[in-house]
Image 1: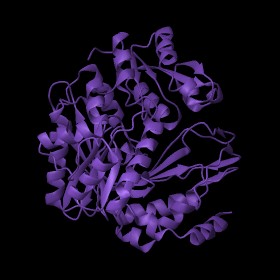
Image 2: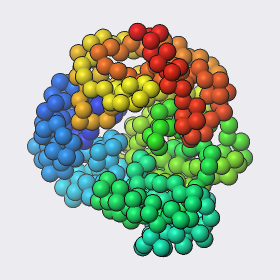
Image 3: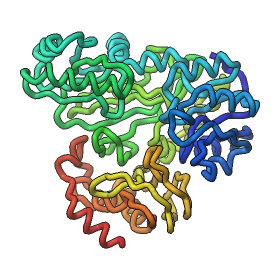
Length: 459
C-alpha cells in the first residue's frame, strides 16, 4: 500500500459521513472532491466540497456503487486519495485495489485485510490463531445434513450466519435439531441474494448478550492502540439505533482483557487504519463477532469521551504518519450517547421519504449534531434512511441520559415521519435508564402504544 502524502481527497460517499470527512479534510488543509448522483445535486456534501462530480443517476448501483464512474471522477478532478466513508464501497477489497493501482491512496486498510475480515469463517480462524475468544462454531457448511451434524456437535440453540454477511442478513436462529436443514437452505438462499455468496457457517447462539465493540487504530509502523469500547446493544433486526461510550456495565478486568484482545486481532493481520473489533458480551465472558475495516457510524461517541478526531487519525495513518503518543494524549472523560435519527415511522419503522418542511436541531452544552439535511431537503427512497445523529456528552451516564432527553425534546423535523418519538420513549424506559438491557431489549420491551402516545404529544 502506498503511504505518500496527498493534497486532494475524493470522498466516495454521500450524506452525513461525506460531510464528516470533508470537514476533517478542510481542517487539515486538504482539498476535497464530492461525488453525487443526480438526486443529490443539491446535497450539502456537494455544496461544501471544493469540487463536485456527478457520477450517475439515483439508484446506488448506477452511482455510489459504480466503481468505474468514481475512479473516473477521481482522475478528472486530480484527486490523489479516496476516502470511502462507511457503507457503499467502504469494505470492498476490489475497490481499494483499483484505487491503489490507479496511483491514488485508499484511506483505509489493505485489500487483503478486507478480504480476511470480510469472510467470517476466515476471520474466525484468524482470531482463534491470535488467541482471541470465539464462540464454538463450524467451517463452511456443505449441505443440510452437514448443518444438522454441526448443530448437534455445537449444541442448541445455534445461529446460522452468512460467511460474506453483515447487518443481520442471512442470519437465522435454530432451536430444534429437525429444523436446521430447512433453515440452512433458506438462509443460504437469502445470503446468495444479498451478497452473491451463499456460504454459511454455524455458531453457538448466546441468548441474552450485550454488543460491545472496541475502536482501534493501527499505523504502518506496527503500532496498534485501542480507543476504548462502545456499547451498541439497542438494536432492531441487528441494526444499531443507540450507541454509548464507554460500556457502563463492563467490569474493569473484563474491559482490560477485551481491549487487549482487540489489539491482538489487529496485530494478527498486520492491520493499518482505524477499525472496530466487535464482541458479544455474555456475563463476564466475551467472544469475537467480526471486525469492521472502516470508520463506524458510531465513532462520534468515542470522539466525545477521548477528544480524538478519528477521521483525521485515519487520514494521517494513510499518509504513513506514526500514531506516536496518541494513546497517552487522551484521558477519557465522562459518558457519551448517540441516537440515530431515521426517516421512518417511530413504531412501525416503515420508511418515510419526502420533503422536510420544518427543521430545528437541538443545541447547547454537550450536544453534537452530525447531519446532512436542511429545511426543504428531500429524503430519497434510494438510500439509507438516516437523517442525523444526535450525540451528547455528560459527566456521567445519568447526566448524558438526561441531556439526551432534553435534546430529543428540542428536535423538530416536519414533513416526514421520524423515529424521534421512539427515542423519547426509550430514554424514559426505566430499564434503559438503569442501563439494564441487552440486544433483545426492543423485541421484549417495545411498546408501540406508548410510542404512538409520545408521537401525539410531539404533534
